[in-house]
Image 1 (cartoon, protein in one colour):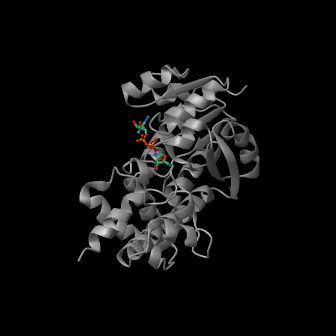
Image 2: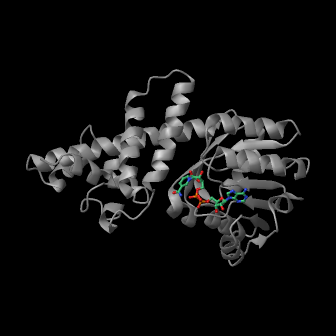
Length: 295
Ligand code: NAD
C-alpha cells in the first residue's frame, strides 16, 4: 500500500485527502492553515508539522495549491526531501510554464512527476467523482492512475508534462465562453418575450446544445440542480473561472494564438467580479448580462 503525502488541504484538497484516507491509504497531510489541519485530522489524515515531514518516506506526494508560484515554492522545498523513486503529482490548476518548470525541478533529482488538474469542483472532490487531466510520462501515469482513481471517476492521460494543464485551460475557455453565450441567449429571449423553459426545450435538443445549458443552466427552473436554483451559491466561483480564463489568455498569447472569444470572455468575467460577484457561482454571469442590457 503506497504511503501518501498531501499538501494543501483547502476546499478541494481537504475532501480529496479524506477520500484517500477513507479508502485505507496511509495519508499524511499539511496545510498552512491550522483549522484546515484540524479538519483533515478528523477525516483520518495524519498531520505533520511542515511540508517536508509530509513527504519523508512517502511513495506518492500530491499538492493541491492556489497557483503556480505556490506549487513551485512548495516543490522547491519538498523535492530534496522526497525519497528516490517517489512520484509527485500536482493537482492544482496552474499556468503551463510553471507546471513544466515543476516537472523539470523534480526530474533533475530523478523523481517522477505528473500534472493532474481536475474538473468537478468541490462537489466532485467530496463525492470522489473528479475528472483528472494528466500530463507526464506513460510510466508515471501508470503509477499515479490507481491513486487518482480513489479521488475521481475519470483519469485521462493527455500526453507529455504540462499537457494536463493545457487540457484544463482549453476546457474552461470553452466553458466560460459558452456560459456567456447561453446567458446572452436567455436574456435576448426574455426581452423578446420567449420563456426560459421554451428556449431551453428548443436549444437543448438543437444545435446550440451544450453543457452550460443542459447541466448547469444559468436561469432557475429548467435544470433543478443548477446553482441558479440556489441563489448562485457555488459550485464553481466566478473568481476561479476568471483565474482559468486568464491562464488561457496567457497561454494563448505565449504561442501567438488569437483566442478572440476566450480573451473577451476573460474581460467579461473580470467586469463581473469587479461588481462584487467573485464569490458567486460563475453562472451568475446571466445577471450581469441582464443588468447591462437594461433600457
Ligand atoms: P483553497 O484556497 O481552498 O486551497 C488551497 C490551500 O493551499 C489553502 O488551504 C492554503 O492554505 C494551502 N497552501 C497555500 N500555500 C501552502 C503551502 N506553502 N504549504 C501548505 N499549504 C499551502 O483552493 P481550492 O479551492 O482547494 O483550489 C485548489 C486548486 O484547485 C486551485 O489551483 C484551483 O484553481 C483548483 N480548482 C478548484 C476548484 C474549486 O471548485 N474550488 C475546481 C477545480 C480546480
